[in-house]
Image (cartoon, rainbow, N blue to C red; front, side, top):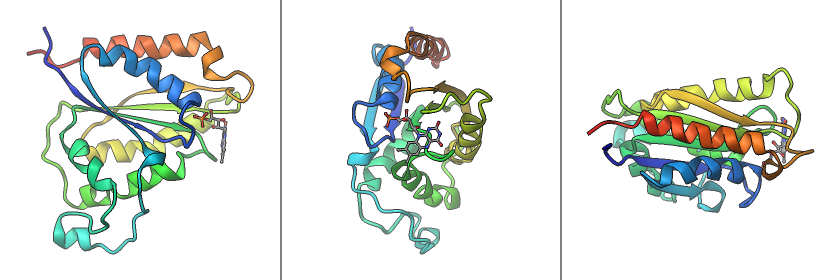
Length: 191
Ligand SMILES: Cc1cc2nc3c(=O)[nH]c(=O)nc-3n(C[C@H](O)[C@H](O)[C@H](O)COP(=O)(O)O)c2cc1C
């Protein structure tokens, strides 16, 4: 028996049923059978970018009153964070970058150390990305976000060449997502 994990899944593509959603879903389908998944389509949230006001330094919370306050409790309490994004110019989407930047509040007011949280990154890329450069640069940029949450990045799942072959037509990518789900299940916290 394993205890039930709370998993926060953020889908950062503006497309509801695109490649990123398909790849993340293949992973979440496995995890959701055993754990509680809180899924947010970030583009549907009302989110402002960070205003760099630094009031979070004094107030210990972000003064911008928007949907980010739906995410803060999950970011603080979840056991696993699964961030999913298409690669846009070797980075995540603007919508997801807003979420990341709004975590400056957690950078300045660090969460209590837990040592048992996991970060997972799911990326899709239109180009073949044969040398993995796009995925590597995007992954490196996201790594600091995961460590800011105290959920070090443990796995990056990537599907490339989606402009030619949508993820739904890439059985190997969907299988890799399901296998990663199985692997994460084996690493769930024991009771
Ligand atoms: C603004 C924009 C920038 C993009 N930049 C890249 C890129 O740098 N490298 C790449 O391989 N694909 C790039 N793409 C293609 C997307 O990453 C690819 O189509 C992705 O699978 C879309 O995912 P979605 O269907 O979930 O939106 C870009 C697409 C857009 C719209």
